[in-house]
Length: 160
Image (cartoon, rainbow, N blue to C red; front, side, top):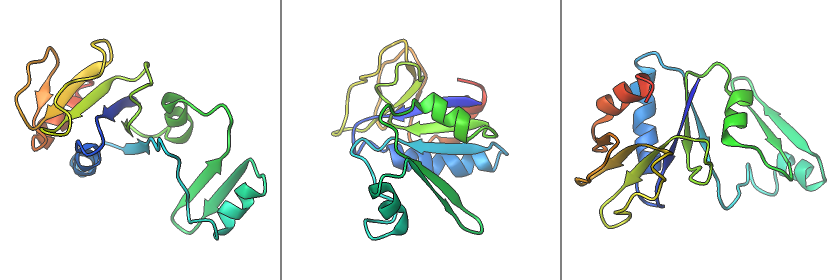
């Protein structure tokens, strides 16, 4: 299992890149999972849904199960690292893409830059694996244009 974080400022194109990369990787037979870092928290189903009521009542975890989907929501004061979450939840995935995770020093990162939104790499040299930018940028790591999905997928499959 390979794990890489897709980082960048809000509006830089992280979600767009991931939603375009996933089908490219899937058609190659790569099993892909995505972990979304929700900095401001999130709600599943809203306050009036049973799952939210169970959590509000103090449950430490709630599972949602339907015919073809399932999800587990857990409350944990200590949180969980992206790597631990990936290993525990997506054991059969070949590749885990984390949207966000800039502060996780153990993750290699692809930084997404977009002219007028984010023009400068913020990741440390140790963590930076590649850059995706819609403009030319000097770099010691591979630099891809957002439309170079096949090249990015090749690079990811190669082990970055």
